[in-house]
Amino acid sequence: MNCQTFRQRLDCLTAKQRAVDVEVASHLDGCSDCRQFLAATDRFDQRVSSVLKTVPMAEDFLDRLLTVVEEDSSAEPLPIAKRIRHSRAFTIVNQLIVTGLAIAVIFAASSLWSPDPVESQFDYAVAKSELTQKFFHITDNNWSDLAAFDYTGFQIGRLDSAVQKWSFSEPVGLDLGNDATHDVVAFQFSYEKSQRLKWSGTLLVLPTEKFNGSPQETLPGSSSGMQILEWQSADGSLTYLCFVEEGSADELAGAMFGNIS
Amino acid sequence: MGHQSDQFDEEMNTERAKASESVGISVQELVTSYYKDVYRFAYRLSGNQTDAEDLTQQTFLIACRKLHQVNDLSKVRSWMFTIVRNAFLKSTKHNETELSAFEDAVVAVSEPEELNLNFDEEALELALAEMPETYRTPILLYYFEEIGYKEIAEALEVPIGTVMSRLSRGKKFLRSQLSPEEKPTTDNNSAK
Image 1 (cartoon, chains in turn cyan, orange):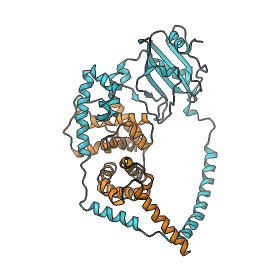
Image 2 (cartoon, chains in turn purple, cyan):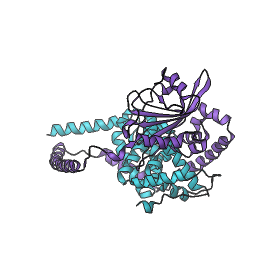
Image 3 (cartoon, rainbow over the protein chains, first blue to last red):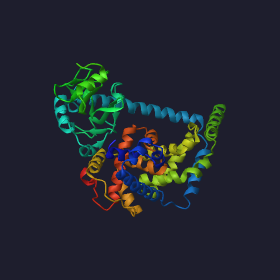
Image 4 (cartoon, each protein chain N blue to C red):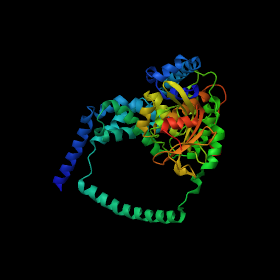
């Protein structure tokens, strides 16, 4: 885990959680910069916490609040006949309004709906070219400039079991379109064999449905001489694009899947 | 009809009794135990005393009626915070443009070299006011409840990764705003 990713993780953990987190302890042991960062942000967090907890409150607020809550909890319910009348009147008016609204919405939707939402589609070849420029030989500095992945746009769900053998950094996200959501999620990965680092690099995960012309194969394929693997998840929902920095891409594919197409 | 009405009253009373019995806490105890926490959170969400009082009142009225849904006393506090937040969201309009302007601003800031610890409440309030609600709430929960991203994700019913990125970005924004280096703004005027 690089320092940038580590610090993002620190920001999400409470002091108690940090104290028992093995990864945190391990990174802090070997990184004086992050130890300093943690000490400074701890003091800052304590200050924020203490300032936030001081707010102006009217002296009689508790009394007023108790009065309102007690009045509400001792309030007599409406007689059942009145409730039914109210309920029926509301239901008839409500049904008329809902029906009218439904007709209007269906009419509006039928005139606006387009079967092919072109804006949300990207050309895979173009995206791959852009992503290759950005991620092939990415440095730690460039990586640390990337935004933490926001899951709002698409859920990556479970990665395929073959990929789960890898170790991953916290994800970062990329927005290829004009909307605010992320269209690509990226991880720095490493894969050890016999307790020795054999492969490392960057794995990009793309939602297949958003990209036209993405690879159809469910086994990783490499371009001759290039350290790039690309393939589709077993269920077809995800497309993987992998830039191998350390180790041979072909051997990595072979180690993961037994053979390579 | 009289019989039906009596039956209805009885059911309502049973429901209320169930509400206070299920977690072993009365309505009065609920209010006196949590009104400060709820009010503080409401105040920080809304930014003023009047709205905070209204939100707190709404929260306790809802909580008292639904108290029977809570089976674990240890979760009452975070459940109350969820009610405050929902009540707050109902009372405000959201502006997605504000969200993207904020995210752009956060990406542009860098960590301050030195953190300022001498900021006052006004500065903190201003910084929080610049955050969209989707960032402010996880930050407030983090500082008020002292819970991590997983618990916040559960309370807000949003994915863990979303909470992580919002906490990380939100705290980075606070540090940069409250420390005397470059101070980005979300430029709300132009967003509108």
